[in-house]
Length: 191
Image (cartoon, rainbow, N blue to C red; front, side, top):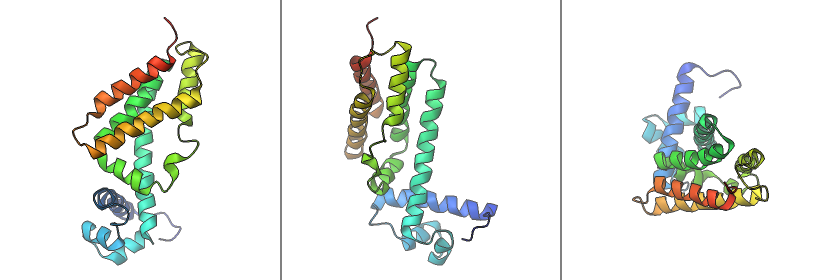
């Protein structure tokens, strides 16, 4: 597409292609996704897909960006609803796991398309900031290493979500409660 503003119809078609791509990558993996498979699933020609996305990587990147935007929006809403610094950290954990539990196709796309981003050094920095806020409010002990705790709790989140992919009956809601309990045991100040 050119640099012009897309029409309503073009935006709707791009959204459809993104949604179809999420499903294909979730079902068949990155390697099993192709422009032709996307076209077939959307009921259009491959040329029509290319009109909107020049390459397979471009449409997968758009799908990944849409999934991350939805995930971040969901977690941000949960954090905004939480009344205290401590409950904001809890909301981060529960919001993240809850969203991923409700959207397993998004989890699979994130894993397939992250292309190395999953281990980026700043991945857990927003969570570390929430832990810092809880420390500043007095809810968490002042000696807690926020970055370290965010990375460790993040690893527990990754492990729980990964287990749910291998074992569909794995209860992510119970896992979220366990991860929050782990967070509290590591960080809560004496009351």
